[in-house]
Amino acid sequence: MFGPVTTVMTFADDPETSARWWADQLGADVRLDIDGETVYAWLTVAGVEIGFHQADDDRNPRGGSPVVYWAVTDRDATRRRLLTAGCVHHRGPLTVSEGRRICQIIDPFGTVIGLEGP
Image (cartoon, rainbow, N blue to C red; front, side):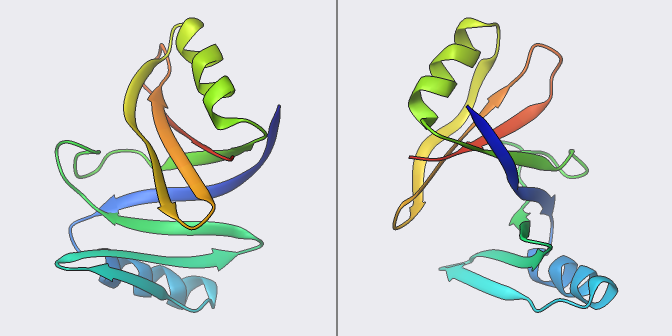
């Protein structure tokens, strides 16, 4: 049911600046998705997307932990199973780009987990 980790998302006041700092440390290129005033910046290291999202109190407060996204074969079924097992809804489900569907849940211990898949 679970595949490899696809994305580690961190939250920052200035996603582009944070991404550029990490890109310098890791020798990677920064990519940007700008939607109005919202910036999502990311780089890819060893096949894993390292994402930098705008911090806000609704999604994940400043200094919150990164969100690890797991590749799953059926996002909706996996989400239902985890909610039944004691997780709670956090964000989504949403389609972030063509063919890329995600959601976030919170496990019983307070960790935000991302699921990505069809």
